[in-house]
Amino acid sequence: MGKQNGVAPASHRMKMNVGDQTYVIESRALGGLHEHRLYAYRVWCDGELVQDWTEGNMADFFGQLSTAGKS
Image 1 (cartoon, rainbow, N blue to C red):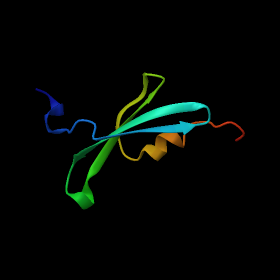
Image 2 (image 1 turned 90 degrees about the vertical axis):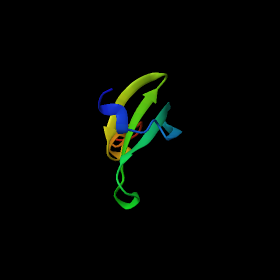
Image 3 (image 1 turned 60 degrees about the vertical axis):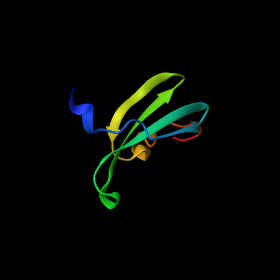
């Protein structure tokens, strides 16, 4: 029994294509009231975990990816 007790399991799962890669994103609520609820996400690519549970907005992670044709 550790810090994970009050944390919900992944509650949402979706696929996203960026460039030629397909990512699977899982998210879960961390707690708080609806208008103040915090969320965490993790990201998988080709069956490998590339971003473990991170609190915040997943757009921050995808904003760090380089995409073809951008400099």
